[in-house]
Length: 454
Image 1 (spheres, rainbow, N blue to C red):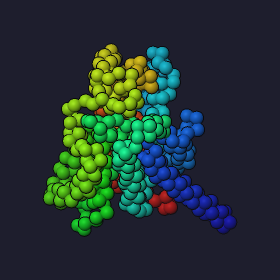
Image 2 (cartoon, rainbow, N blue to C red; image 1 turned 90 degrees about the horizontal axis):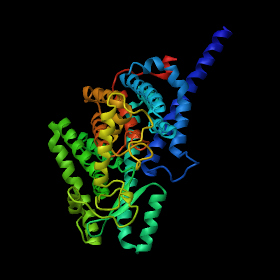
Image 3 (tube, one colour; image 1 turned 180 degrees about the vertical axis):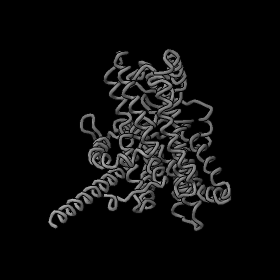
Image 4 (cartoon, rainbow, N blue to C red; image 1 turned 45 degrees about the horizontal axis):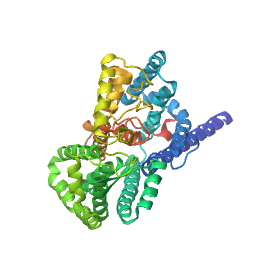
């Protein structure tokens, strides 16, 4: 009798321990998401090479490891877990290839750490397949993304207006602060309009589609969401980043196709939410004496000269390449290097740690997919893309569930933007992918309850 009671007590303690670990991991994941969005490059505070998001991600991994091992059998019923493991196995093989090709050990290590957020996929999946309040959990993390993107947008808009109203000496201080914190950069477009580039602004279009999908699904007019949506539109414009605009257009088409029976509702929401955007654009035009939308449209086909030596991402093929890491001319040169590298070893690649050009000593260029093939070959690229596609399939077949449209548009934004800028191999873009994993895993009808299954 006593032994049975002792067993029940140990079982109860084990249940509580696992529940606590999952809860703490879930909270830390939400904090990581907010810090990634607001903290941009993550160097606003650091301990040597470690940033807050690295420390928190490591904490989540360590805390969740026993739980993940305990539920390994359940986790391996998910295709995306199996394919992610295949990718990591090939990454290990590619590291050996890179070592024998005498690639830099520092860059090989960097290639591994660029994907460190993917080690959190198992615990994210495990949290998603609990039956307890899964819709509320998705709503919570969606709210975190919208709040973070809202803060980022207000910072962008505020910087846009302040930059024009301060003297040149103050502008230099503002630009240096953004650069030192690795937040982003500033450049003047057209005659004088300021472009504020922040590294985490990819979350602005993601937040836009979270709100759009929410407003489509409700009949009531939620004016706060509509106003926030309009403000996000203007923040997206001020990024003057063409890859974001292209991705937003693609995501809008996807949302329209998925909600073709509610297209009137979608266009009505868009028409109403454009009003705050027009007000902010009018205020900008009063300050800069230029139409920001027109400058943005011109940016699609024209190049502009930056106003300082380190403006962040700008477009000007005639400027000094050393100060123009994102110029069209340098991009074309990088493409040429990448194509040559791929042609020499298309199947297995040159191995982890391969550096395609001296101008990219960290080993990665702007073209994520080409880099993937150059380093890991067609095999590595296919294994990674298979992992991504395994997330899309359950979203498509379970579209009737809420937040499926949000996950699909988020995935499309990540995949489109990553063609022009690498977001699927760093700690800024991968948290958004974890958001997609969370929603995709929650749809697959393999829920468990920690309390009941122990």
